[in-house]
Image (cartoon, rainbow, N blue to C red; front, top):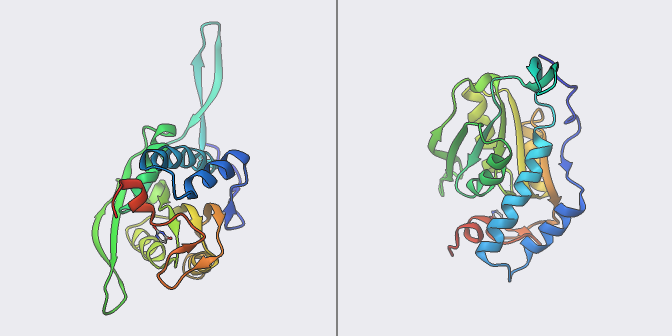
Length: 217
Ligand code: URA
C-alpha cells in the first residue's frame, strides 16, 4: 500500500477554481430555485470530493488489459467514508457518492440545548472500522463552528482518526473554532465569507442551507 504525503498540511484549503466560483455565485442568488440549489450543491460537492480524496492510500495490483498484463493502481481498503452532520450535510452526499459510490455513509445529529448551550447528540450511526478509514465529515455551512467541533469530538470518541471537514461556506470564526479544538482536522471549503450576523447566519452567505436544499422555511 502506498500513501502519498498529505496535501492537507495547511488548513483551511479554499478551493480556487473557476467552476467552483461560478457555481457558488449561482447558489448564493436568492432567486435560485430548490431544484437549482440541489443541482448546484450536487455539482459542488462532487468537485469538493475530488479534493478531499486526494491523499487516499493506493495499492498496486496485477490486471490484464485486452492486450497484456500490467501492474496498475487501485484504492487500498478500507474505503473512505462520508459522515453527514444532519440535516443539511445530507445535501452534500449525492455528489460525493456520485464520485465514490461504494463509500459507506454515517450520520450524526446534534442540537443545541437552549439552556446549557451545549451540543446534544440525538442520532449517531457510523460505518464499521471507523478508526482505519478516512472520514470525510460534511456540512455545507461552517458558521460558529460549535456543532462541527462537537461532531468531530464525538467521532474521535468513537475512534475516528483520519478526519477531514468539508463545507461549502465558512467564516473566520468557524475556522478559528475548529483550529482551536481540532487542529489536526483539515478543512476544505469553497469560500471564507465575511462573518456571522447576530442570528448566526453567514454573511453574505446563501441563507439557510437546509431550507434551501429541502424546500422548507
Ligand atoms: N447554517 C445555515 O444554513 N446558514 C447559515 O448562514 C449559517 C448556518
